[in-house]
Length: 102
Ligand code: HEC
Image (cartoon, rainbow, N blue to C red; front, side, top):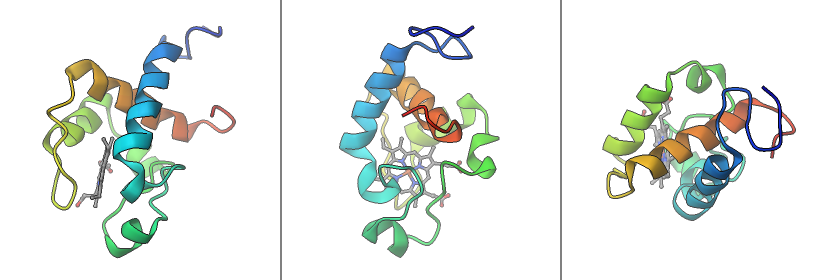
């Protein structure tokens, strides 16, 4: 299904927009605006993943959601965000796999 409101998996653009906003606020210091982790902090954290890679994109929404909820040092837990907001973040992370969808 292609439309302005919904992406391929029926994910709403509103969800992706909220995910983007939350990501820019909470996550870019380590993960970078492009999700590649190529930031001064990300480079120090050797385990920083590349969100554009298949390593990350092959994971299920549930796995990514769980990771954001629990965190893993040095990444903090984001369980203070609502479930919906954490799912919005997962949907936004998915956009890193699709070129030109920024
Ligand atoms: C302090 C730096 C830092 C911040 C801030 C941070 N992360 Fe992370 N993140 C990491 C590191 C380091 C890892 C790798 C952890 C590991 O596997 O050992 C990681 C891993 C992840 C993974 C797992 C990827 C995979 O391959 O399974 C996801 C998803 C993720 N981060 C999302 C987020 C989101 C969303 C935010 C903001 C809400 C965020 N991170 C904020 C450092 C950070």
